[in-house]
Length: 389
Image (spheres, rainbow, N blue to C red):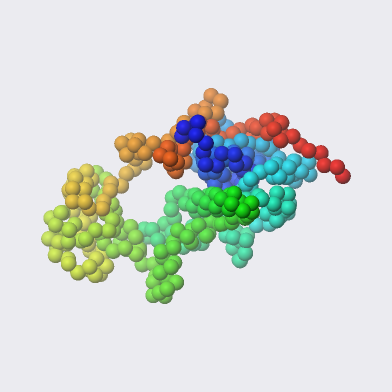
């Protein structure tokens, strides 16, 4: 984005006490919008994400995933069990606008950096807590990890077919969604603070993020006890949508079909048995048979040949791209979703913030910091204040 134009959160100081994914990515989202984010890390080891590598890949001493989720931040070290370090951190808290933490319930209370304690230091603070399963109930002390939260939420039973076991989402979807909710809560409370001077506490969890993701299913089930998850056959892509909704093999790949009238699909693909299906109920009653007929037909041509036919008729469809095909596509290039970040002699490509502001994409060349990289500079800017006994 044009460096001469202030970003929306310019001037906001965020202290990021969080580790690994949900909290750090929430803080990164605020940094992308212009906030100054200082990451508070344990001396010696730092954020566990520095060593817990996605695909085992590292660069310049840290994992590539750490680089990706901590770009555009500063790092200082502080041992929160040390009275001296804790006293200094509390002085930073007094100057901050936002605190983000994702420890298990009770940890920040024991340290003395929970919301109630921080609010006594800084009454207008905006405080954000990300947990695994909230602060109450029988699950509150369970490990807050993405796969575990997906599993408790029931999400893995929504993918795959009826002959499959549970199929988890193959990315950290709970963490990523939680990061969005935390960042949204922070920005909402900042707006309130600018209007009224009042800070506040934004809270969410991996489990709540997974339940919110399932709002259609849960809302329907809460109002109709007959609703249950009945997964379809091998081509179905949704337990609650009828044929032809799914993915189908072609001669050289796969094609996806969304909601489309079956007679229209039958006419376009020269399948008279489908063209004659004028009763919408048959899309449910004969779902697997319809999908099998489509799969057999699609297998006779290439993905592009079928796209040429279906796109011309404004059918809702798309190719199912592999990772390599996505990265090589003109569509990926057109959306400009990557940026270059630099740390010393190391240059990395990462994704950028997904939001455009005033028509401009949000990019920054600042890489993730080395552990304690900004200790001296931050302490010079915010020198420790001696408190008399």
